[in-house]
Image (cartoon, rainbow, N blue to C red; front, side):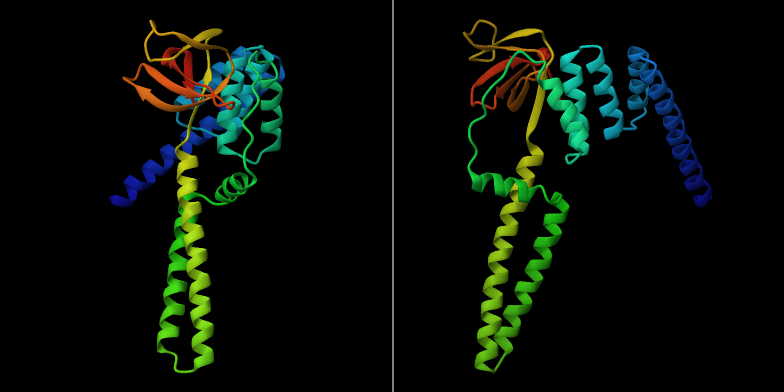
Length: 249
């Protein structure tokens, strides 16, 4: 009976996946024929079925780009890039879409050390770094035990050095693990409103800090009562924005 139930759920999942593929092909055909809004409608139906992929978001971004809808195009390119961070085609199309935005900012120069750590941290997933930490811990313990049990002075010295080296590598790997966790927990959003006043405090009566326009990417660093978000730009400017004007990805 248990096998029958599992087979039933497997059949349902396979059927849904096949249906999603058919809809995806149908939407792609509409896109190729220039029927971008019709294609978007079908892509949305696929998303409602919880079938997400970088190709799906990428194609949606292309549709919105063809329709000159800046914010949705950038939003979907960013979603695609999040699933496939090394895809050059997605990055190129995102760059083209970002050139259509009004707001252009100079990023705060990043230290080479910070660049190296961020790039290295993105080499593996959180699980990958965690597994590596466990393995290095085992290596360190093994070398330390070998050092403790060794009676030969030369061998003892070698195991001591190896245990120190493995411990230092373990510490560095642990730092990268925590950095990867921080990077994965970063929140970003796209401005969806044509023009919006960014406030100094989370209320409409506060002063305007600066003005942003649709399509601008911001980092979300804090939320307030699910109605306001504290945002940060790449140039370091910080302010508050109503959640109605922002779509997180």
